[in-house]
Length: 210
Image 1 (tube, rainbow, N blue to C red):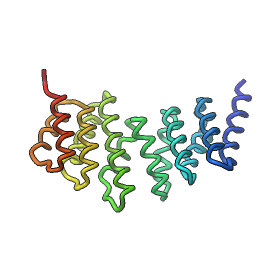
Image 2: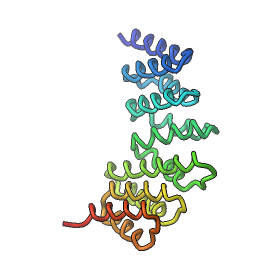
Image 3: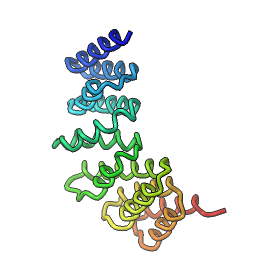
């Protein structure tokens, strides 16, 4: 039975690698996801699919890698470090943010603090900030929670990017500790963007103590 599963996985990887049109690639990705394989070769093939020109393929690969977590976390982190393609890196951050595994904390925090050179990088920072919120709200490690709040507080109070401040506010609300609430309250004293201020106001209201 194990041999048959191995053969099927290899066939699926081959179908993905040799797909001629996006629909074929998406179908192969769906089949790999459904197989629930944790083989490194299958995960690597899914990560390589991030380089496909059609966005539907990248989206499907993200969904598959999220489903295959936690086995996909370390390969995703390694792939980010070894890739110079901003498009591929964006898909990797999206997957890691959706997974919310604390192993990705350092990478996501690093991306949040990256200076923005273009619109794509700005979007990636916002996604990374939401990933920190997921990690901070789901982990039971006090140090990780503290570091997540610290980074998100910086993201809420410092950057010029209103979208990042907005994402940080949502994430701090998600973490919902007294320290996160204090950061949101502090933001009310200085936030000038109407959209962000409205979101921070909503977050503080929902975090009011009973």
